[in-house]
Image (cartoon, rainbow, N blue to C red):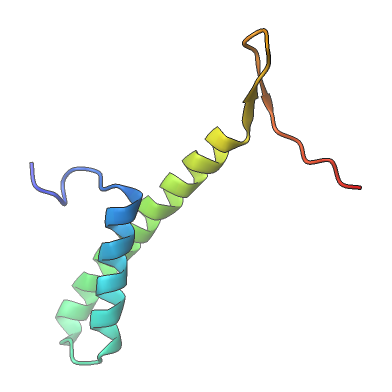
Length: 77
């Protein structure tokens, strides 16, 4: 299984995404290659988004003393 075939960590995805952006910003990438890089970038961005949403969900869950989970609520004053 290659690195592209397995799910990358958030950090790996972000690093790859940043590299693609830098490469595309040079303006020296042939159109066909740029389209391929853009496609990879959208997949990496989707992976980052998924990881962030999962982390947010995990962080907003609280475990009560009885083991029951509840959503974290911020009380505005």
